[in-house]
Image (cartoon, rainbow, N blue to C red):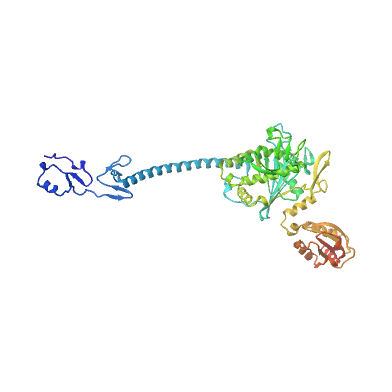
Length: 550
């Protein structure tokens, strides 16, 4: 007889069970045996649970419970397929692989997020630390954009000064600003110009300094620091006095300043991965300066054409003047400042490039370069706007102004008080031409920008009228090249346009101001004698108008 508790299913094959031997069977077993067409087997009763699939999981009573985690009573157990169920085996394998990949991805994402938090926190801390040293205000100012001073008038002027205070105790004159540069940005037309102010330019300090009431402009910072300069409208200290001197003598308001030492410049160049400078020397060999020491990147040897410079060698070029056996900088300090302006533009382009802005290491380097080596009166809330403006001004739209341009020099060299100095072309302390030049360069007044020339003749019979009118035109930006008397007196004023219509705004102003119409130059004998853009002959009508307004 069959044991009572024997479980038939232990030897089951899917859909079939083994038949009991004939000699042990009953009539019911014989009947069942006849139902099988396969020797030794009979069809078993239907499975107690149908195979089902839910959410990519399937269950079957005839498969083994392989619930991951070792819990056979889990809500959705995973079953092991039979050896011939290849599709289900692939599905199970993929499911297990997906779970592993999902967990791996989650770990990677968490790691990246933690890393970003650490890096972001580090740079945030570093910027906060740097901004508190360099800029006015706090880091929260970066969350908003503030208009810059001068932006409403269409022009922002920045004075940059470089010192060698970080060059060690043995460096004499470390607080002298041997590099002074004016950067002016036209915020309406997205253009700019840079000009270097010669360090030996003779100026008045209007302060009792150790050097006296006047001296070279590179001593103005030290003077301002020593007398604790403090006047309304200017920063305090050395940069305040320097700003006042430049603004007064050049006729350009100074809105911001930046004082930078050697370390800041050198490290900034290194932080952006170096800069490229095109050397255009009048010597076919390029530039050579044997006076820069090896520890400072010397001797300077640069070929004509493009040269890539790291921070040390960029600083060496910025300090080169071609003295004592060098070549390639025949104009000495004027050529040196020319390359300083080139390097400033190259550094600006590199710092704003995608390769730098997307590189945390380079941004960190720039922040380190600033640190204790830069001081400025820019507020943190103004930095964002400054960055926006800088991106809009292309290098091709930045004009480099050379005050010692051989074609139209505004300054010259000379001797004064036993010293070799630089002074205005018009003479010591005569900055009239320089003021007019920068007024034309920075003004939005069309009369100023047209920069017309004029000859003013007095045909009114009233003494001094031509001089008065010439002064009025000069204030408007018209350059009067000659003041004289007309050959004959005239009842009305005459304006002759010799510019061939190239100065329309000036012409319109003159005709309206003198209440006259343009005269043909063929009808005015004096017109052939002068080459100015406009010939102006003041008549008696102008004299009566002038008298009535006095």
